[in-house]
Image 1 (tube, rainbow, N blue to C red):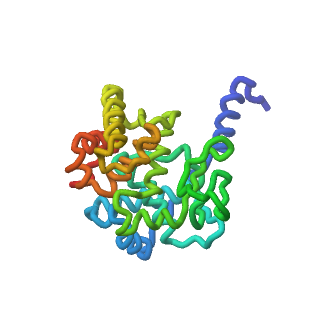
Image 2: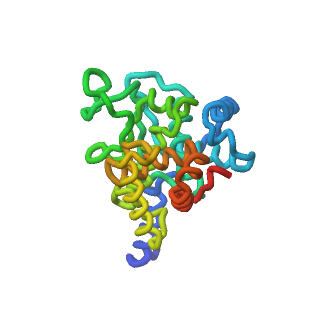
Image 3: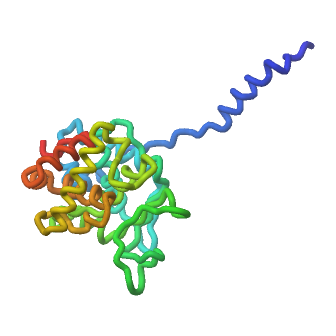
Length: 257
């Protein structure tokens, strides 16, 4: 019996290796009727969508669950918590058909605020959410109290979880600097930077209703005004029309419509 020449075996081996090593796509479980009711009751962004966009939102939430692990630390996770986390992830990327958080593998949910040593008990606990770096790269930590407050009627212009997911979008181009180059055309980069610095000066001069935390640096400015954009879009559009217009371009959304 004649054997195949070695040159023929190499491509066959490569093909077999590909099928052995390729990762199976994670199964996407559809949301339940209970899930949909929770979204409708607690997530204003979802509640105000039409039926077509609600279905698209639901699919994005289900896809998020299939790719990112959500884990509880020091508490018992609820379906509400999971859905609020997933919604926080979906809201900023709702304008992008195929976006996935490739720089995120897991979200850790803590009971309350925590410190820089990731402790949620004891003193100096003033962190409500953070995107990990270094050995924590690919992980996000959120406070459940802050997560739930962000979706309450008393939250105003603030939403901690959306804030942190916007940091991830910002970071996706390799730098957390307030300039999301993956979302913003090159020709708009310089005008956006100029606008950020102009608005930061207004905040510093007490001539703005934007949360003063935004003047920490450009990355925090972008995350803070993004909270404002998604939580109080009509107010932002009335008080800061140019900023609203730029954020609409960045996120490919018009939340006031």
